[in-house]
Image 1: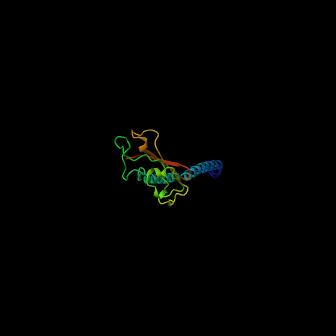
Image 2: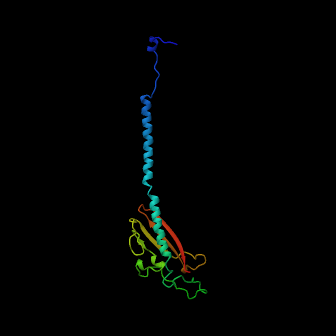
Length: 182
């Protein structure tokens, strides 16, 4: 088939490409998606340090709990433990001693009751030296008798130790342990 020159002049050209309206719509949609992704990225980056701070707080809490649990039961308990005051089976066991520091400084704490009401910010090791990298963290320790007999053991022979560490973002991590006089 052949075309004359006049037919070629009036032939409708084939359109390739996008119109201006289509280009503007694509730009608006891509801009909206980028704004949403940027907001999501910013939120994730802003809270990505929380697990790190939580791990640091847990490490401090475990260090304090380990230190406390290695100590004697109280001033009257022999090293290695004593017998549980159950009356007939341990009539000469260690007497009840009030919970408190016995007037000692932290480096001289020798029993678990000494740690009651300990509060430090920043946390310190047992020699009183600030733990490096924990500025803004706070450690609080309580050592108390539980509210009721614990597994038939008299209250005088049970202590509940709770270590709470608050990180720089005010998230508190608490760990607890029971210590029995035996």
